[in-house]
Image (tube, rainbow, N blue to C red; front, side, top):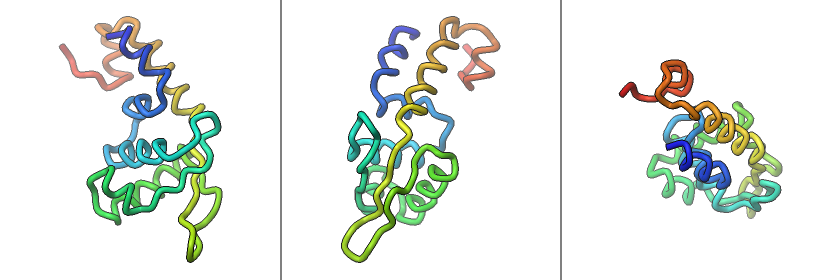
Length: 124
């Protein structure tokens, strides 16, 4: 289990699965990551309809997830939507990958009760 998580840390889209977010927030964040530059996290501007399809949720749930991701500082709005351009987001890739590394370090001994409590793992 530990070796697989170390591999996941190298891919931001997989690190999203380890974040303490709701399922819709994770799917929306993964959708944003599909449309951004991985090196900087800049220039992610998918339509809300596209994010809705990725998350299989309502447009209202997507807007709520975007608002929550912004409040939790996982993403930042770099340009507001205009009549002809969608909202542009910057994704905090360093925090996403950093959280994945943090989780994988604590999973060195996944059977310990402390790891199960901290990381919300199911008891065996």
